[in-house]
Amino acid sequence: MNLNYPAGWEKAREIRYAQGYISPSVRYYVGPYPLSEPETLSMLSFTRCIKPELTISLHTQGREIYWDFMNLATARDLAIARRFSVLSGYTVAQVPAESSFAGYKDWFIQFFRRPGFTIEAGIGVSPIPISQTPIIYRSLEAVFLEGMFL
Image (tube, rainbow, N blue to C red; front, side, top):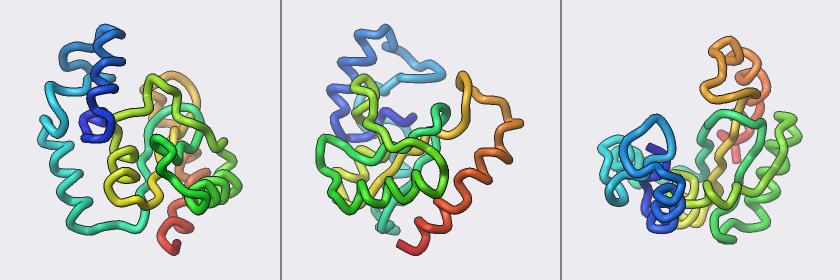
């Protein structure tokens, strides 16, 4: 449930409903209302409790790093994304318009005004093969280590 957060949720619903995602499915379902799903509510509650300095969410696929939400991110956030790009070989990119709302990163940036990143890992069609796990780990290990010390 990555499209169930209160950060442009209404816009995500509009987009996904127009695409035909109006009921539970393996992707793109936004839920009946923001935070309707226990997993989403748990992530939000946990994040509010620990108040991290930044977040890194992994998705598949594309080898891209998304770093902004509605122009709320700062030059510092872009600089971190660029550093992650150098470390991983992934491209810093803007989130496609149809995927720009109601995600965890979106909520984190909006609520905390701190850096949040979604990294689209792996190559191919989702679900990517489990055999890519070692390659993904090797490409992102330095990103995780860098993120721990920012």
